[in-house]
Length: 165
Image 1 (cartoon, helix red, strand yellow):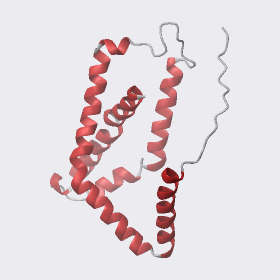
Image 2: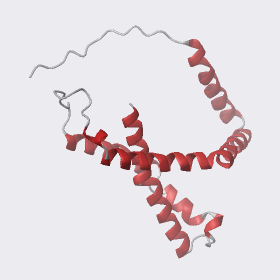
Image 3: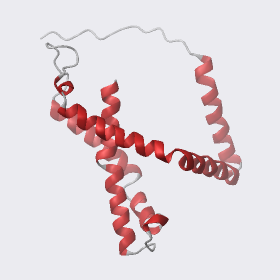
């Protein structure tokens, strides 16, 4: 089988209107975080709280929609569509793609959140749970939250993005 020629020359041009505003905002945030940590943390917490107060419903609705999309596509005729046509063959085997996906997402989860997130939920459980911090009820809440945040829903979000592309 002949390998496809994938070498292409691409002439990239920097779009200054798209590049510089976020770059300048990032540079300003780094400068503030290095010079005035309290102001930076206060601003960051204010923005985070505003987003969570106003858009939690959108995050939840989007996640549920992604899970539903994956289920619907899996059981629909769309699941049989081969991207690239009938003669298209994958570059990697299916099992390699599974391992890449699992290793990447698990590595990110373990690297950043494996210890921190369950401990956070154990010692600061959500008020609506009505459990005492550090209790067995808080531990159950922490495990329920971890299951919700690191199993079906994130993979459904990744898969929906893949389907879109």
